[in-house]
Each structure stands twice: as C-alpha cells, then as structure tokens.
Length: 290
Image (cartoon, rainbow, N blue to C red; front, side):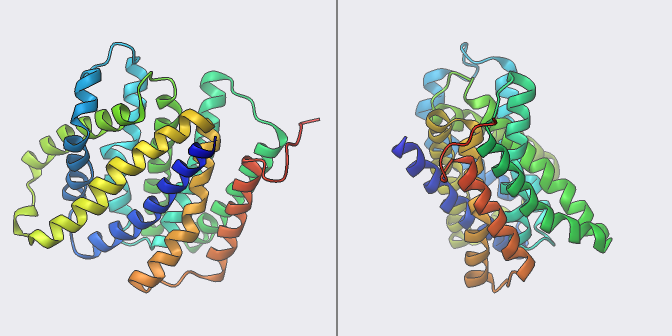
C-alpha cells in the first residue's frame, strides 16, 4: 500500500508540471498534433520491450479494455492542448484532475457495480464542489471560448477515467499498458500528421529535447507507469482521487513559471478538492453508510 501511495504522488507531481509545460508549449505555438507526437512517440520507443513482450494485441486483454484505455491516449493530449490555447493552468488543473475521479467512480459503478462507503461519497461530493467553483463562473460568464473549453476538458477527464477503470481489468502490467497506449497513439498521430503536416522540423533541438523530456519521458512513461501501479494497489477510484491534488501544485508551478495568478475562488476550489481526497482515502478514519 505504501508503494502505491508513493507511486501516485510521483505521478501527481509530474502531472502538475506537465500541465504547465503544455501551457508553455501552446504559448510557443507548438501545434496539438506535434505535442501529441512528442508525448507518445518518445515513451512508445522507451517502453518497446514491454509492449513487444505482451504483443500489439495481447490475448489476455479484452478489446473493450484496449479501446477504453485509449481515452488517455492521443485524444486526451489533443483536447488538453486545444483548450489550453485560452484556458489558464489553474482552470485546467481544477477541472480535469478533479472531475476524473468522479467519472471513474461513475464508470466503476455503472459497468461493474462497484460500491462506495460514506467516506468516499463525501469525498466525491467535495471534489465535485471544488470543480463546480471553476465551472459555474465560466458558464455564467457566457464566454463562448470558456464554454467550449469546459466541454473539451470534461471530455479529456472522461478519457483519463476510462483508462483508470479499464486498466485494472486488462491483465497488463503498468509498463505494458503504458507502452500500448503510447504505441497506438503514435500511430494515430503519425497518420494525422501525414495528412495535416508538422512544424517540428522548424524547431530547435533544444525545444524538441525539452518537450520530449517533459511530455514523453516523464509524463508519457514515468507517470503513466506510476499511475498504473497505483491503480493495481489502491484501486481505480482511490488512485484517481489523488488527481485532485494536482490543481494546487499546478497553480503554484504555473505562478512560478508563467506568472499566472490564481483567483481566491480558485484557491477555495483547491481546498475543497484536496479535502475530498482526504475523505476518499479515509484519512479521517473509515465511515460506514449506516
């Protein structure tokens, strides 16, 4: 269990830095498809020994699980990159990581009948409250771009959740699952780039090296493996709930790196979501549903 918590905390720190790095990449006018190629192409190569070991279409893995796991593949990064053209790091961090565990819980309940105790239910409610503090002001503001971003980010969150639910039933190890998702995503993005074209050839090697490390090596390989191990040891909803810790870290890194200052409402949302994580993980002791 301790290794599971260490794994998920490692993933959380990398995710927080990844969102800021993605915002930085978008500010540098790196196209979403180019970013996705760096995000998945690098770990697809690094993790080749593992996906070659299980095969491109592993027999023990149901087709539905492979399809669901792809929710955290190319579509996820493309949706995030599109939204971050205008959405600040604090909003992305609060919406995607906070809503993901709620989607994961809903999928686990709807597909497999998984039940949750009172602690988890209180935690989910607090996490949802934190996310709503970001969503509602954007909706009430009536800005077309903001409303569009909400849709993109919620789709990304649901894709991330589908991976967390399907992976546990895939029969794959974390490196195998990460390798397959990265391999499939690289093939998809590569095909799209053949059609739409790429601007990577015009970038300096320093820029490509930085984003290959931040997007590919750390986020694509290390964090995905760590998250997969946490799912195996902690379970999908509990592992997913730790994603609600990302907003605070992302906001802090975003402020230090990009100078983006979160509002007071953003910090309240963070507090609610973080408290929700504590309840989901029963920090305050197990509570029964009565």
